[in-house]
Image (cartoon, rainbow, N blue to C red; front, side):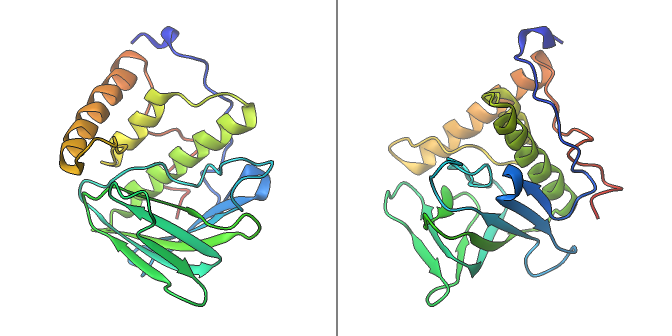
Amino acid sequence: MFAFLRAPLPPRTNNAANNPIIYEKGLSSVKFHAPESKYVMTHQIPPTGGENGDSVITPPFHYHIYQDEYFYLQKGTAIIFRGLDPNPFATLSEDGQRTATIPAGRYHRFENASKTDDLVIDIHLTPESYENEQRFFRNFFGYLDDCKSAKTAPSFFQLMVFLHSADTPLALPLPTEWIGRIASRILLFTAASWGSWILGYKQSYPEYYEPSKSK
């Protein structure tokens, strides 16, 4: 409606037909597996820090309203945070614990624990919504990668439109998690509505995702 109020969008890279999808000039990637696979996708995340800075594949602090999330470590070391605890809930490594589960409604995030080695980790969300997950992750990471390439800050409202389409609020770190979940959902709905109806941001762009090309 008032798209003239928003900042210019970065040029979009056409990755709709690619699998895996390569990001950050080859440093990171996301590969989707077939529907009903044990793990629906594999993320490759480069070492933490360095010249590349934070990887676009490293997720923000968030929670899933309806889905449980399962992790299996293939390579490297991952640290997973859950709830409001500043200490890791789990450390996944090749010679130790390799799996972890986050139930629906719990705050969480994860990152590559290494400053020198890649992290390769399998992820599954259940109940599975295969096409919705392809649409969300392809759009979310594709947009962040294009912003990074263009050296422009991503729009908070565009990110919230994407997250709302996936029922995935950003996690507000309020004193208690249940209050935070309510506030996070209110923020998500309000910001996504403004971003969509006022600023004209979309849930999906054909350069990032087309059902006929993403199989």
